[in-house]
Structure formats: structure tokens, C-alpha cells
Image (cartoon, rainbow, N blue to C red; front, side, top):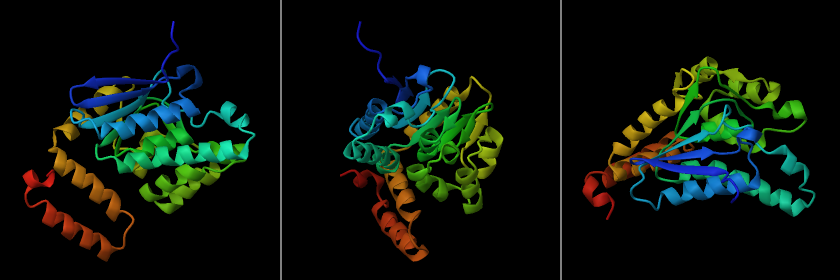
Length: 244
């Protein structure tokens, strides 16, 4: 018998479902799973039949964050640096690919798992799920995942999350704008798939340009953002020519 894959891939129409498959570790991110996620997300842009991605976790949890057992074994400084670089690239790839990504947060999303949940373009969260950044309670820092967090919610709320390390429930996450929908347990994947289907149904050039421009203007001054919007408006006058 072969080893069990750490990431499961399934296509439902034009939606690619990625399921983190380490339920016995609450889908903690070891190097193998992190590499698999990065490669799977990056490769989606090369597949014309895929219009959107849904990311979820196997078992009762979404993702427990970094696999601390693996990190304890990284005594070589270069190995630790490579692992940090890999984590950063995974957080970044969500915004770099042209296909929209929806996270189906089926259970606890902590630390790096919370980072994954927020890195997506949209998020659906189970009513009983929790989301948090407990690193400070372990004497470390929610370092790489902090970048996405402070860009998506207010600074006071973001600082509270990373400085106290206390998780928030689904309703609080919704109030803070961390997720788009809160749904009953057991319905997370179906609601995320519904969103994914709607996103995949949008004309691919329009969706790709929308996502590219959205992430570009988020970090610009108003004038720069307006100029980029003006340039995009010129390109989008004829959708049929955009992909040529």
C-alpha cells in the first residue's frame, strides 16, 4: 500500500477542491503539505477547465498551523530559513494566481491555519469553528501570517488577536470581516462550493483582471490606485481582446 496523500484534489465542475489531509495532526502544516499546497495552487492557473478553488481540511479541524514537531527538528539554520521562505511563498501565492480561492473553514484554524483561511479571496466558516493566532502564548510571534491579517481587519482588532493569542468564534470573525459567511456545521463545503461555482461562472478574463487589480490597489496610495484602475478600464473595454 502506498502512503496516504497529504493533499486531496477533486474537481466538481469548474471548481477544484483542495483538502488538507492530515486529520490526525489537525492538518498541521509540515513541509510536505506546505509544498503540496503551494504547487497545487500555482498549477491551477495553467488549467483552463478550473475557474475557482475551494480549500478545506479533512476531519474536524481546518488547520492547526505549523507542525511544531517538525520545527523542533530544524536545527540547521539554513533549513529553518528555507522553511520560513516556503511559508511566506504559500501565503503569497493566493493573491498571485488569477483564479479566486474560497476557504471552507470546517473547524479550528489556528496560527498558520488562520493565515491560510484569511489568505483566500473569500471565506466560509462553520458556526462552531474558531480562528486565532496563539503564537504569543507559546513564546513566539505570529510573524508571516500577520501581514495578511493587518490588511484585512482594523489595526486595534488585529493587534488584540496577535498580542493576546485568544481565538474568536465564527460570529466575531464575521463582524471583524475575516470571513464572508457563517453557516451551520456540516454545510461549510456546500456553501463554499456554491460561491466557487458563481466565481467560476464569471468570464475568465474579467475575473483575472478583477483579482489582479484588487490586490494591486490594496497596497497603493489613492492616486496610484486610481491610475491603475484607469489603465485597467482601458484594457477591459473589450473583454474578448483581453486574453489575446
